[in-house]
Image 1 (cartoon, rainbow, N blue to C red):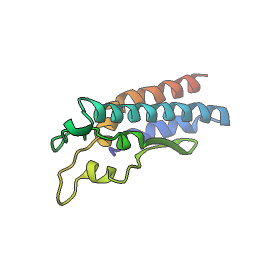
Image 2 (image 1 turned 120 degrees about the vertical axis):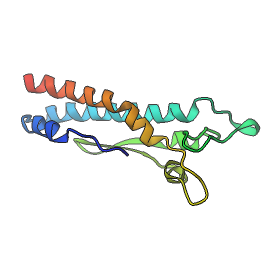
Image 3 (image 1 turned 120 degrees about the horizontal axis):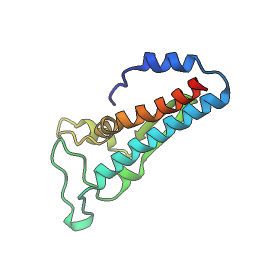
Image 4 (image 1 turned 135 degrees about the horizontal axis):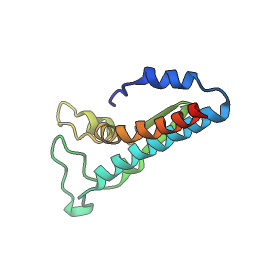
Length: 135
């Protein structure tokens, strides 16, 4: 997953906040951002995919083409802490697709989804933080 830059600025703004309700609002924005990344990853897997006997695997470097739906249905968003969200694919072969193996080139879908949604997610969280800081 790509690293998010500007965390010092966000952390500085968060330090200005107090109260569980404010933290909860920021957490909700983070979860919504995680859902946006999940939706983009799922969209990339299903775009142009054909299941069954006519299924064609994706080209190296392209997101995997959905066949059974297991990969898409195993993408989840969790919130292990109030201000932390994790987006993961828990299909047994998701890491091999994302990163490739010695026998197969990568078919990344999570990293590209995060990069595509990054600006929108940051804007969503900043909007909530700015509103809270301004009172």
